[in-house]
Length: 313
Image 1 (spheres, rainbow, N blue to C red):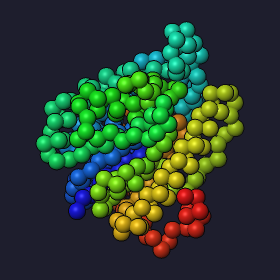
Image 2 (image 1 turned 90 degrees about the vertical axis):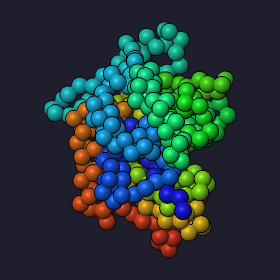
Image 3 (image 1 turned 30 degrees about the vertical axis):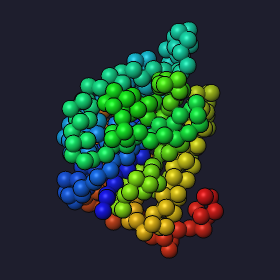
């Protein structure tokens, strides 16, 4: 028997996943062998594999824009109590003048990863027979790749975590071994099927979106907001496809699959890291899992898979 915890991509919304995971691991006493993450999920897998939930909470409730971006392509303004995001044209121009390939740079995130995922932690994961796996998109070979703590050196694994989080073209492009890598969510936002291929017999998957679309987008006002909307559209459909494939794979192998969705829309821009909101989301994730487990959890049953989902595969 092998149990897996899968955490989807979702930027700052990862704080909600942390709260859910904390409840599952400390109150439901779930024990996992595999920890798979994409993007923000990849930032969490090492701490979760070692049960370092308090340390993970400190990271997710103290991070801000400066923790992530060495050159921030966004300007965040408070208007009528709400965050309004615009493009920082000066920073973007600076990146282009310096011959960089993206609008912004996320080198601070790379340092954050190295500071908080230590070599001792990495070795401890291996010694404890746990496995942490992160998803990256290889833009050079046009392939999705999965990087395991059992198959990498510490230095390489830190690179893969960083690459998995880099939402290009707004964040840095990972160039490694003459290949270019970006956010794993571009190909596998919810790597359920990979957990099955690696031997999982039961899977808890935390999905950082609502189960049903709840909002309509405000019309784009400039090329950058349009680019965001296009990416969001694509990732929404990648996510749905990943879940459908995961359900079918689980059905064929008689694997128990529990899906945990966010109950409400947390944010429309997950690249904005607001400490107060992320603290609130962590607590919300924990409390929601605690008080409404039946609403939060959608256990997959093969007999209720909609025909339109099968047709999409």
